[in-house]
Image (cartoon, rainbow, N blue to C red; front, side, top):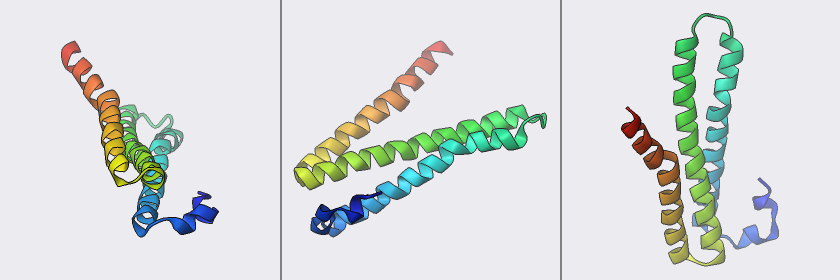
Amino acid sequence: LTVPFAQGYAQTTSFQRDLFFAILSATAISAALLIAPSAWHRIHFRQKDKEHMLLTSNKLTMVGLFFLALAMIGAVMLIADFVFGSTTMIVSGIVAGLVFGLLWAIIPLARRATSD
């Protein structure tokens, strides 16, 4: 949050500033979605609607993780672009996307498919 107030921010390109705002937005959306299940639980506690609450919380968490991955991939890309340039930014973004996709989606889904 302090990046725009730092001295080096004046040297950023418009792409980097746009990417920073997209990352900030994805982070805020992620936080809202990941914290929402706690609020749902507090509001719906002892309302005898546990199944709906669990299904909704699961969906909110899954979408929240997606936005968290976007924010983290974007942060890696922004830093790589600022420090090293566009080629490193693209490569690091692809690598980060593959790591998150593999660890947060492909491996868990493969395990789920074999355990069913």
